[in-house]
Length: 320
Length: 320
Image 1 (cartoon, chains in turn cyan, yellow):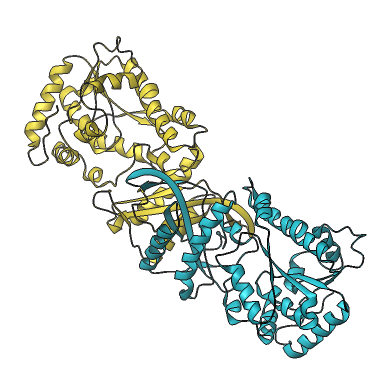
Image 2 (image 1 turned 90 degrees about the horizontal axis):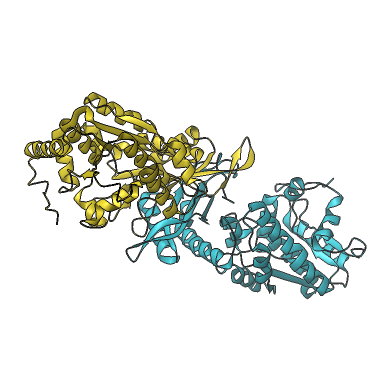
């Protein structure tokens, strides 16, 4: 049973001292490794780990080809400013190889998870020689997956490390007593930049969750360009989340005065408190027209743009 | 070379007398047949033919299963009020049989045309023993397809009637010197009901043009229910055209608090003068939300509704 520390109870400075000491004590003069996504959880763990271990913590950012425009560079720059070196590992070919031909949403999600753990991060862990893994697991993750003792075995299995061989590996989860609001409070105390907290939610499978049908480099690039327009134009309306989705359906369009099939981008912007229920943001019609025009201008092959007008439920926030 | 009669030049009463005399003279004491779609052209031809031939003109309405809710009944009732009996021929099985498995828009369009001419109307013509066909061809149709002398041969070929055997058949096209505005003026003089002129444009392949992917009875019923909501709620905004499209893409939705894949309806409403360019109607957001809610309520399986926000070009009015 994990003892929860609520955001209210959390005293960030003493929590930081305690976790830094624990990490330093556990790792000793060994080495550790962690994967940084740029989210608040993995960012907080990265800073705790570096305070404890300095250069003996290797922090990798896996470039899966599914991130938004400039996202990897931005995360690396944030951490460079905080004195932390982040190593970017280009694994685009592996992710797109695993996604090739898949159209079922569950199969796509599974391919991304498997590629990350078993193929890419598993290999990095084995090659690094580090026996300690730092992970940004929070209490909500534990609630949502399997509880208790079984979890560590699962992680090694996911990494493709034999349970026998796994003897000696240790997983450190310094955030496991916190929930999201606690991690935010901790992150601010650790000096994480404000931009990081202000970011709208972004799904685990990244832009692959915004592509209906097969996830190819070209199709991800299409939705990436559309996402860039949507995030730029809709950031000022206080929406909970706003996104672009590339449809698989082809629709008739005009190119050089001739009928031609083209692609459709669906734009969603949600007003919501907790993501459990949500309503489309009532944007002005001129704003919607501007979004459509800029997407058509910026994204090759797009002839049609729609705006979601249905609530959740029965819709969901993401389409895939 | 066909001599055009402009709407301005047209004197409806003398035009009607002249065409009624021509039809009566040509058909003599024989019989004629025509297909009524409910559009202005075929409606005007039906009335001219019945003035000339009375019960010797057999007027059929082919129920292809692709019409809007209540459309066939409405047309039959219009003509019953005008003293004309319209025979409804149920050909739904033949149309859906021809459309089975087809997803390419051109293939679907071709299947509908072939089924109408070669299978259904061709059979009706042969069985009726009528040697005279009345058709609502207008000058714009001639401009848009093949010109001149070849056309009549083509029609017989389309009907599956051997050119040898076709000897003795005659096609009468009383509207061929007119364009759309002329036919409207004529139709009013013939006493066609105002509802018929006020109707928004509707494509030849009917609701099949509003279904992305395979056209099945179930999928047509889905878009038919959505069309009914859209036409009811958007008729008062002075839009040039408004429609519902059923997508093939499946999107995530919630059913009984569980994730489930559902269907998406796209709503389009166009402001336009001549259909060559068009802009989405800037509807109030409450109207859009009402449209979405009523579609979700009325149409089983729909979890997502979008509204088109792109102009034509690069979009087109219809999606298929």
